[in-house]
Each structure stands twice: as structure tokens, then as C-alpha cells.
Amino acid sequence: KQEVTQIPAALSVPEGENLVLNCSFTDSAIYNLQWFRQDPGKGLTSLLLIQSSQREQTSGRLNASLDKSSGRSTLYIAASQPGDSATYLCAIIQGTYKYIFGTGTRLKVLA
Amino acid sequence: DAGVIQSPRHEVTEMGQEVTLRCKPISGHDYLFWYRQTMMRGLELLIYFNNNVPIDDSGMPEDRFSAKMPNASFSTLKIQPSEPRDSAVYFCASMPGWTDTQYFGPGTRLTVL
Image (cartoon, rainbow over all chains, first blue to last red; front, side, top):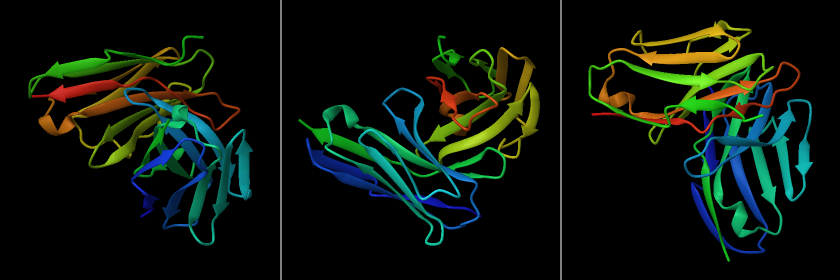
């Protein structure tokens, strides 16, 4: 059974700092991996999608990497801003649209 | 487009009552997903539809849960009878057929007393 774990569970950093969020999974037979952002009281917003054949994806200050062999993905946020404060979720996609979500990392960027 | 619309945004009910959650997907999207989010179990996929047809309902916890999609612009998730352990935030998401990006609604916070 696929298990997805995110470490740390919570993170507080000063504005401007570069940071890395981690996602680990137990079964490397994945279709895609996706990172989401969730703001309090709201739904999820897709940030980056990495297909299983890819190693990384970039969007603005965000960079996500995928290492299937080690069962790991990282989300790198450069020059963090208070507006980045949110919960970040990774999701493993197995089979056709079967999403398995991680436990999330609550990020707070202090001004 | 207004995005995915869910109603109600908050629902408080008593144990044993029937609860119906509603979702209007983004127009033109072929897929619709229902999720449940709790502190203990995180975010779980309950069921998803493709072109109004249920494809995978293996995440539906019990027979008390049922979902329908009578047309391309409307779906319901029903719990009958409701129990306190059903308390959670329920999300609906839709996705066009040409991408893997899902668009989430704001969620319905359900509290069963």
C-alpha cells in the first residue's frame, strides 16, 4: 500500500530564506507526482506536476524534483515571502487519477 | 469562469440525518472528483467520474455514502445516515480531459453532532 509522508510537518522561516519541503513515498510505481498549495479555509491549488519520466519542474520561484528510485520528491522555494505561507501537499498519482496525498507541511514565512 | 462551486460551505447536522453536498464543476471539464479531508487521515479520494460515469468508487468508506452525477454540470455526495465520524471537509474538484491538473472547489465543512 502506497504511503506518502511529508517532513517537516510544520516550518517557520524568516522572509527571504530559501527552503526545501520533502515528500517521500513507499512504492516507486507512480504515474505522476503533483505539488499543491492549500490556504486556510480554501481548496487546493496545483503548483507543479512532474511526470514519472521527468526529474524536475520549475515555475517561477518554485522547483520540484523527483527521484523515483529513492522514493523522494522535494519542493524548493526560493526567496520565500509572507504570501507563501500555506500548507503544501504532495500527491502521488497511481493508475488513472488515483491520487494519494501526503500529510502536508504547514509553512509560515515571517515578515 | 467562477471555478468549481460547492454548496453549502458549512453544514451542521445531527447524527442520523441525511446530508447532501453539491458540486458544480467548471464548464467543459470531463472529470469530477470528491475528496474528504480530516486531521487524522489527511486528504482522501472518495470517488471520481468521467463524462458523468463513476469510474472508481473504491474510496467510498461505507454504503452510507453515495455519489451521483446526473449531468455534466452537477454532482452530489450524499451521506445517509450521517455519523459524527463523518465530520470533515469535503472537496470537489474538476479536470479537463487534456491535462492532469485538477481544480478544487472551496470545500464544504461538515459537522455531525
